[in-house]
Length: 114
Image 1: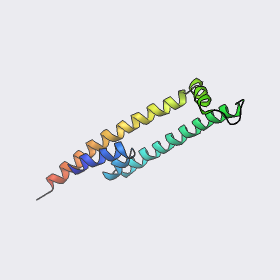
Image 2: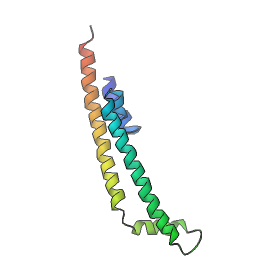
Image 3: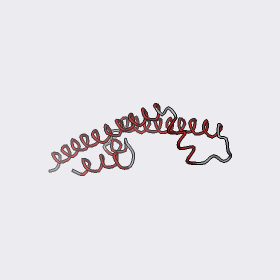
Image 4: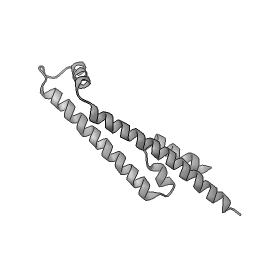
C-alpha cells in the first residue's frame, strides 16, 4: 500500500511524473517531466511576449500595474489557456497512472512475501 499512496501523492503535489519515477517507470516519468518542463517554458515565453508588448506600448513610464493587468485581460490568451488544459490533463493522467501502477507493484510485493 506504500507505493499506491506515495507515488500519486508525489505526482499530485510535487511535480507530475515523479510518481512514475518512484514506481521505477523511468522512461514514462522522464517523458512526463519533460512535457511539464516544455509546457512551463512555453507558458513563460508567451506571458513574457504579452507583457513586453503591453509595456512597450505604455504611455507612461513606469506603467501602472493595474493598467497592465487590464491590458493582459484584453489580450488573446488562447495559447495560455490551451497550455493550462494540456497541463491539467497531463497532471491528472500522471496521478491516476501513478496510483494504478503503485497499487499493482504493492500487490506484487505483497504476493512475493514469505
